[in-house]
Length: 516
Image 1 (cartoon, rainbow, N blue to C red):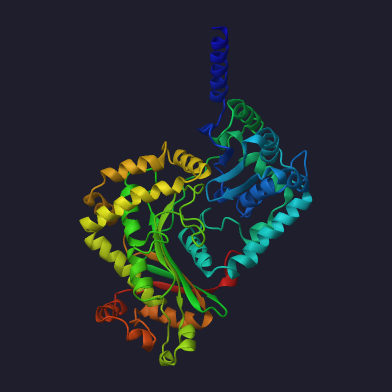
Image 2 (cartoon, rainbow, N blue to C red; image 1 turned 30 degrees about the vertical axis):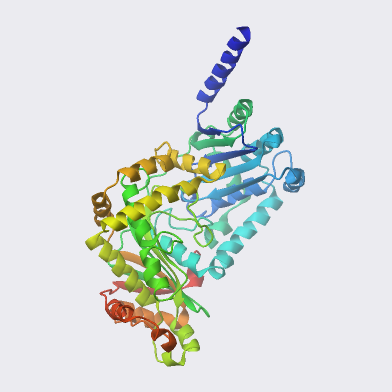
């Protein structure tokens, strides 16, 4: 009896200690696991960068995870932890920064002071600061322009959508912003923005209650000030079809992103209806979707064509949505992976020597035509049933690992939900065709859109003229391919080439002018 009473008191004391924390703790205890995952989400993202210090949050988070602690240098930490096969990293988005630690349960006692040291007492060593800042400047000044035209068009679209707001600059910052950041700025930003008052702690796996208690108590050593809450940020509303063409040298394709603001997030039940519509139109990396079938499969124009109703991080590499990127400001977008320029087509097929523009205008017309058809006609009951059933299975794949399961749970709390993935299955099961079609008509349109196109300098002026005047944009096929196409495809091509799409404005800028 005495042992039972003491055990009960111990549990009560732990519960009292948990309740005294200023931050929420999301727990997924699993005694059968060999692994422990710890996540710390701070409501502090790139939108919290002070004006003129764009990139400060990313730089601070990188120095916290890649630098040293008050006790160990960065090199010492690498040598010490190598045998443990542990890993940790940070992800920064517009509104949150997430630190993730993954390690075997046998190393929990060793990892605890290291985690606390990196988050609560980072060393902010001068040498680490210079190294990490140099890497971030290189990414913004060079890599972002040369590694992926697709990412460049995506970041350029965000720049158009959120111009003039704290969402507008890349998470990694700008050239001017990074150059102005000092080591003192990082120290102050850590003190002011990474506090116990804007923290959510998550833990999963085979952790002991005593380990969690020590971790919570240690994180109480973070500054206790409450950062100033960020005012809601809304995307700009496009006025007609507004295009920005970003030119590069020697580019064989045109990478396209287009979109407009959305007034809905996962916090609203109606989001489930829009997920069904979006999945049918252009689910990421899914060949059954309408855009993929029309543009890639039937016409072999590019590698893929997708649509989104919220930010999708690193779509070029990730096959599934990733946790850790919740946002209060959403936008709808369509991603047309690079289609060929006129120069590229001419160099391959002599029969196309007289064309003026490549496939970008045609592909845009086809995408907007499909979207407008959805708005006007909605889905059929068969399409609705098949897509909803697919999503009920597919969304369960989001949480295949403890780290992802924990991450999506923490994202759920950001949106004011308990467990979005579990709740989503219930929401989907109750959806009707009318719900989905009503959501399409309420939230989607094609008359007012921002469009960014990264293309070759030689393509820019002819494409601008075609977009501004709404000129017909015939699909250009090699003769050998055209002979294999059925009559219905060629007939549809003729209709698409004349689909009404006249841009209200088109600006041509150099890639070197972005993110400065």
